[in-house]
Length: 138
Length: 138
DNA sequence: TTTATTTATGCAACATTATTGCATCTGTGA
DNA sequence: TCACAGATGCAATAATGTTGCATAAATAAA
Image (cartoon, rainbow over the protein chains, first blue to last red):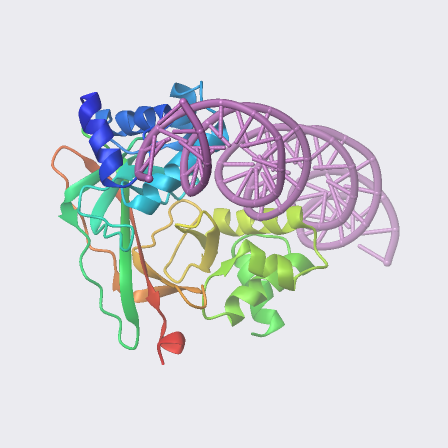
């Protein structure tokens, strides 16, 4: 990923261009899977934990990242592939968590089927599948 | 729920009959939705937090409860409607979380669709839907 | 029923994850 | 280049969950 593009992405989401934001965004763009807070903390040791948390929050607010819940209590964060805005995140794709390597991937090709519940107003749906990923399965 | 039935449930899962376990189990049986740790802690103030955690763990181990992940990081716990054993939990039903009252319900009538991913070994799947529940929607 | 053994509980301490307040520093627009 | 809104780092705090250990209680055995 070129620096120019990183900067434009930040600008497009009306975020100030800072070293921390560039580094965090670059990591997400280079990773082919979701990143946990721990992943970031381990790699970007020159930034304070608080700053990393706030960076993640600002990215989520602006629709750059989305939060992926995890049954372990940890949360991971993935790039928003769809057109997310600060107003509405739409993540109807499936997330896959590998039981072996622990990586969480977004599967944009797999959409969460619409659920209808009589009497209910259905909003977001979140589907997490676990098992062995392509790498760990072979 | 009768006391007798509570005791039998515990006995059936080879758990010792203690006041804490009876009280916790009763709360789950009387609730029509999943309970968070906080719910339990607020209602069962005469037990230590640690004891409540350990009670939940023993119930999960024995297949009485299952853990429901939540995008907020909180976990809730629901009664296992299906036939769960200590060996295998099977919870292919959908969970619903109300954005208004915050309650999480199990929807045994809605099954999580099977997902196939080429090259992957697919194991468990977890589908959480959010929106407004029947009560809050009317 | 009493005793012995196993298991559960409560307390204290600790671990992890995340947030808040505040002083300082920096990016950006004027 | 100057002013100011916003970002950062540090310290403190909060929330959630776990571990070790002494004591208490439940069950099994005598």
